[in-house]
Image 1 (cartoon, one colour):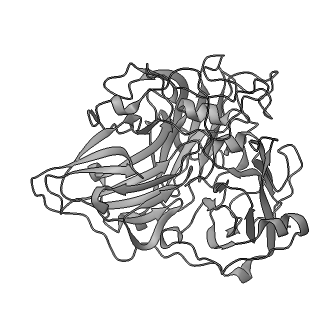
Image 2 (image 1 turned 180 degrees about the horizontal axis):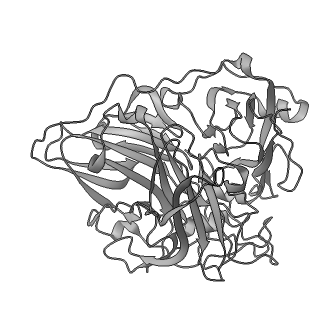
Image 3 (image 1 turned 90 degrees about the vertical axis):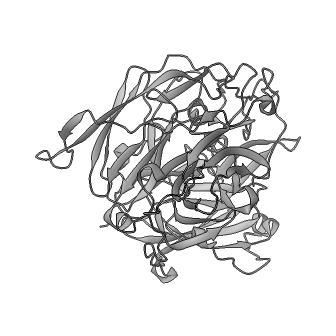
Length: 509
């Protein structure tokens, strides 16, 4: 769990969610994105590819039966936005349209880089998190567009089956735009996944989790610091955990296997998920697709930006009502039918091979620090990567087709989920170290042996938890495209206040 949890002043009385009746709303399932036709492929004008038009717009949505509609911004008519369903190797085009109003309804902080008062108040740019796509379609934070404008992005989908997700990525106000509701799921399928006979159709469902602070009248509350000169707060922890946009929803299930595609879309909250009575489940995939084998679990830690592919078998729980918890807090309920059904899906002992990358393949090892800066009261005022600001020139310039080891050195009290755009990577290990020695003498003095990643992290990742007082090593093949990308902490308040850096993939000579 994240260590830093500050008491935050609020601008309106917060809702006491314990006063709401639980499990009165069914779990909503986001609609499937519908194509608007076909357009010529940017890479081959003789080919036509599916074309989608998705509009960011204001909406009102009820998060609970007993609350009035909440004001959100969303891609489409609901939040989360529509789910994309596509296949590996089948490219598509999306026109992302900014149909938002000209003023933001959440509090702005003009002291943050990229959010200065001379910038338009409302800007958006879309990043498809986990996608191997060209730099012009990656959602670079400065490629934002204002209301009334649109951008056409091309997604080749030349990657394994996985759950990706799309969300706003505008420099300086990303935390506000995602908090407002600008996010959705994106599934890539392939033949390897389909041959495994995993649960599908009505038995495969997204569970998109994000916490929000709500006022007593059910409106979004984004707190600010008591310092009027610097309203930024380092992290946001909401009083309401929404699942697919609902508070305390229930889901009717049959006594069979279900596949749940879990996404942590929170700004800052880490989840420690479990089923009541320690009912076991299996994790079969992570950020970038299937694991080598199913991993049995009774609890799951998942950081902002991470995804987990889970299989839950309800066959031994006929007639039961099982709750999903985050530590001691209730998230949702599963209502298991008492009527037996015939199981048609499988949970095979082997899923998809993940060949481990030998360290000897790395042509460069980079030492990269995660840095926190505090004021005299000890409160964070800014975070950096490698002691470098966003506007400084890119210092990480891997060669296309090469492999590097990135060593993430974290002296802070936080666990930071570090996300690299474009690429997928493998976790090598984590190792406790003495921060003071490194900060004063640049000496890495380890306090224990390396710790291998947990079995449910032993697949392809695009977001890694760099734990407090630990050195986390990842090995990264830089494949796909040359160009300018970013890497950052996926705690959105950190990302917005300088914990993001550009990096450049250089074309091989």
